[in-house]
Length: 68
Image 1 (cartoon, rainbow, N blue to C red):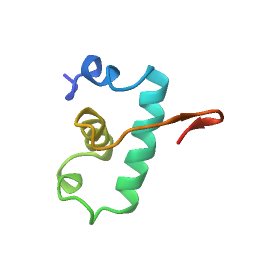
Image 2 (image 1 turned 180 degrees about the vertical axis):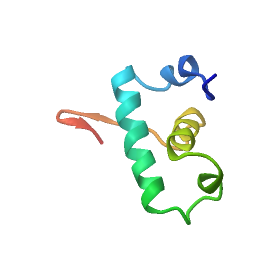
Image 3 (image 1 turned 30 degrees about the vertical axis):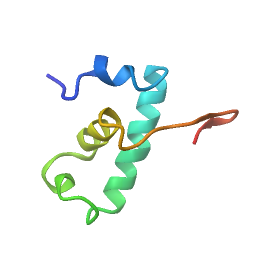
Image 4 (image 1 turned 90 degrees about the vertical axis):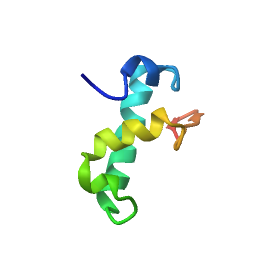
């Protein structure tokens, strides 16, 4: 079972595509700077990224050319 639930996270973004892009960008940030958070050392970056989206730690803004 995936935690946090995809159904819960989809309420935070406008589409599954946006969720994938947002989570991938956040996971890359976490991988590059592992010293920023302790939970990254314990869990995988994608799990932490999805948790950040679920808890509104990060958001996105739709712009004409993509996601900012």
